[in-house]
Image (cartoon, rainbow, N blue to C red):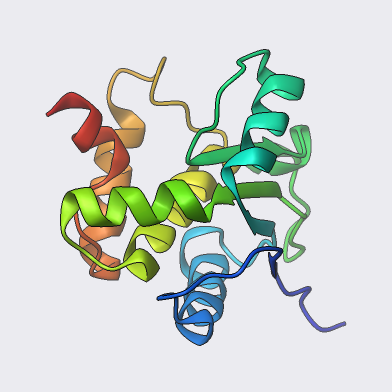
Length: 158
């Protein structure tokens, strides 16, 4: 049976974004970072990210990226040898990504890729708020491997 592919949905206009590059990056994340396990990603706007943040995290403000892991299927002990499990969903605000790209001096496509990597690491069970720097170290390594500028975690600490 062929491997399930990750999905990427744009529900807003995204001037300045190379959708082809983002699709290729999603494939690379699935293969290299997620060990072949697929995930879904929605590129939306601040209004939708605010709604999702309010509904699922009880925080009434827009944010750049949200991750919604499926649950125990993502834990390595629950994986069946050779089978990939759907990891969950990521939502990214194009508007916030565009602003952050401008603030940090790189392209909006790169910013979306940074947010995708961060989201996938959360789908894999990592949590930079409670893991004593583990996610930060792993994100830094992947960022270097993938040729990305500074990560979210590093920017927050700067």
